[in-house]
Image (cartoon, rainbow, N blue to C red; front, top):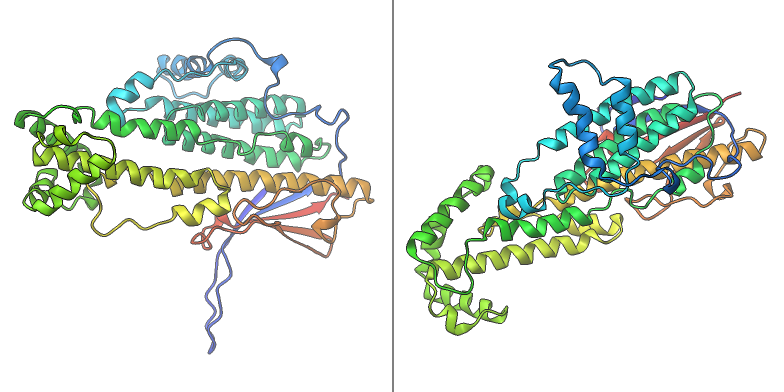
Length: 432
């Protein structure tokens, strides 16, 4: 069984300053030396096409929770409700059906369904653990497929919050999966893990949704016709309501920010010049009030800053994070609070990728031991199958063999050295 131990850093008083050890999340696994199944892809971790049916899984997932809520009890989901989740996970056309609301509500969009999906994932995790404890591996694989498919369907949500929930669901499936690997007689999942999509959760849909936000929030900001004083007042009040959610970063109300800049003719001339450079007609801008011009420039600044972050998300994790981890300016632009923390989302995505890559290493070690009389390799280079790199470094994972016990470690990203979940340490022993 998996044992999670948090090894905390202890300060050692001495005359010479010494670095503190990193806090680690230690995962101990005693495993069988197990060859790959035959056929090699007998066990997969996502539903195959032959298992799929036509339909939208999202309302079917939600139905599982809504039926329970209708009873007015907090009892765990029943067997039939979880079977409904299994069927939903094998439907082929996920559609969250919230695009119209996203376009109108923007960052004010309410997302109550996301918590229901997390609740469903927790119920499935409980079933997964029970199946593993009873060594019902075929049933456990069905549940693993359901949970990982649920996570992938969650990744189709057109928000970055949806992506974070997708990553969380995949992560909670990993705990019982590790428990299963540690059970006697468990099949080897090296090729099943290799067959998973990489990255497992993409951020494409979430970032596309982010690009809709400014259009939704500022849909009343006209870039073709002059706006009346009443229209501008209404828009400014709306912007203030949204910016109030970021009160710790809100230095001036929108009207104050605009009034201060509208007094400076050089600022207005520069703003008009920038807007012309980006495609607005000079003759139209000449008819706009200073506030309308400044708001249009602020929207342009937001779009530039947003894309300056987004362009790095597509890089490999070890290249993306250093470029995304930039400090915001002391005097942030007007719409700075509308920017999402892509660094934190990318960090969570990288953490999931690292965990899956480490599990693939564990299964590769079981393959090696099966071919070498139960002995683990002295070095990773002795392993015959292909091993993935650490997503946070782009290099091989750290590995050492001490007294017959393998120690496999991931490297934390910069700034996360003291956070246990970013300092994974797998301690692997072969069952005698």
